[in-house]
Length: 311
Ligand SMILES: Nc1ncnc2c1ncn2[C@@H]1O[C@H](COP(=O)(O)OP(=O)(O)OP(=O)(O)O)[C@@H](O)[C@H]1O
Image 1: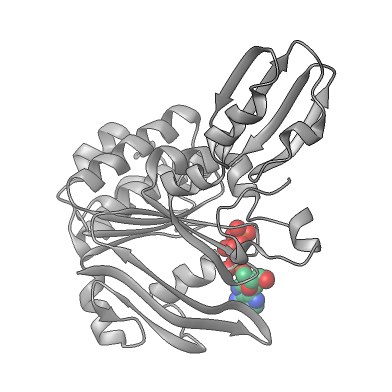
Image 2: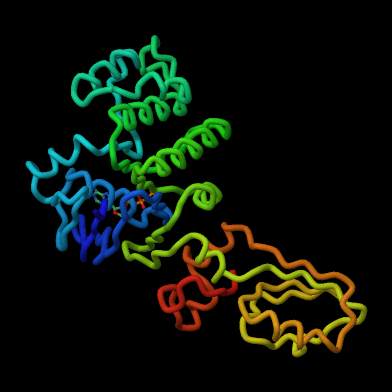
C-alpha cells in the first residue's frame, strides 16, 4: 500500500498559494525527505496531511485514509506518529507527566527503548527544557506507540550532532523494520545519509521527486585536473561540462557527460593529476533552491531535474 498519496493538492491562505497542485506518493517502507527553502510550503503540506487544515483543492491519503474525512483520519492516526515543527507543550507539567498523558491516548510500547536513545530530563517541568530537550521529548512521543508511518517537520532541528546521528540511525533501523518515514529537513547532509527519495518544493510547487542516488548521479562529479601545460577552455568544450574554473595549469569543473569524451579530449595533453569526486550534496540540492544562472536564461529546474548547472 502507498503510505502517502498526494494528488493535485493546493492550499492557499488569504490569497497566498502555499501549496500549488502537488502530486507525489510515499511508498511503504521508504524514508522520504521533503526539502525546500524557508517558506516553500513544507509545513503546509504536513499540516494538511494531519488534517489540521483542509486543502483548497486536490486530495491526499495517509495509510489509505482520506485526510479530508475526519473520522477516517482518526482511524489512520492510531498508526501515525507526528512531530510538529515547533512542538507546543504545556510548560507546567513534567516530561514524564506529558508522556503518561500521551500514553493514555495512544499507547507507549516503545517508551523505554526510546528513552535509552533520546534523553529529555523527564522529572523537570517542560518550561525548564532547552530546545533540544523539547525536541527529544517530541521524538519520543512521536515514536512511542510504534506507528507504521512517521510524519515529522524538521525532526533534528535543535539536536546536537550526537543526537542527530542517533536519530539518523534510528530512522534507518525503523525503515529496515518496514516503517515509513516522511520528514522535512534543512540539513542536506542528513538527507544523503538517511533518505531513499527526496521531494524538493519551492514557492509551493514541487520541483522534483527523485531517488537520492540518482539525483547525485545526475548532478555530475567534481573534476580537478592538473596538466603539464595550461589547457585552453575550448579543449574541454564538451557536453556536460559546467562551472569551469581555471588557475594556470589547474582546472576544476562539474562533469555530467561521457567519461570517454573527456578522456579523448585529454589525450593530447600531459595529465599530471586527476581527481574525480562526488560533489557535496549541498551543491546538488542548491541547484533546486533560489535563483540560478540557468533560470535567468529561461530554463527552470523542473525543465531539467538533477541536471548540472552553475551555482
Ligand atoms: N496560517 C497561515 N496563514 C497565512 N499564511 C501562511 C500560514 N502558514 C503559512 N503561510 C505562508 O505559506 C507559505 C508556506 O509556509 P510554510 O510554513 O508551509 O513553509 P515551510 O516550507 O514550512 O517554511 P520553513 O522552512 O521556514 O518552516 C509562506 O509564504 C507562509 O508565510
